[in-house]
Image (cartoon, rainbow, N blue to C red; front, side, top):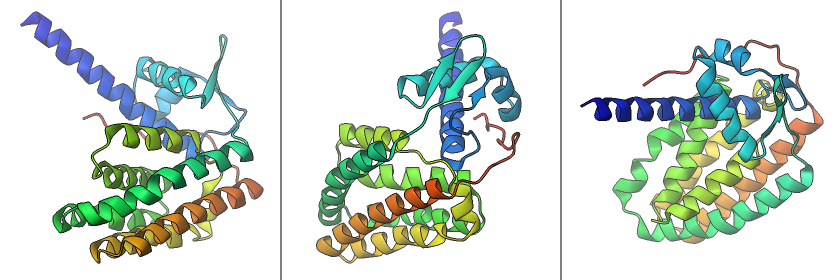
Length: 238
């Protein structure tokens, strides 16, 4: 029984590390954590309401993805993402996601697609509420769950990695201007087109959506918005 208890403890620690990692990635995209700035694990842990250990582990995961870099005796520095890198990630996502949406349109059942509606609606709700981190998480879940209907786990993993690497700083300004709502509503449009069985229209919608997202990235980088420190929310421990 002791071994099983230890195994359960390890699993719980791994889940917490993953939750912290998701929270930090969302904060990176939202601009809560600024490029070039150095953050300590204890400081971030205090804001997230967890111990420093899962934060350090999550930051090491982010470092392996190239999102942060360790700074000796200080913490982790948030790395920059170049326009070229963003363009490359967008191009790859278009090559993968657009035809996959077409396949799913033809292969998925109506019930499977309808199960995505609460996620699509939640994206819009979060955008209207200016809940940026909630918006980003709902968007991530919608896209990866939709792609998962194609039955290719490696494809989902690849797109998930591209999403991590193509994170954006300064979305807050766009959010406050209400420019994220139209992008959020495209998820419902896409879902309705897929439910109608129109593969071509669904693919065109996905292509337009990814292009729209890339244009928002460029606009946000041109108009950065400074965010005060101490705005990370606590991690919910399941």
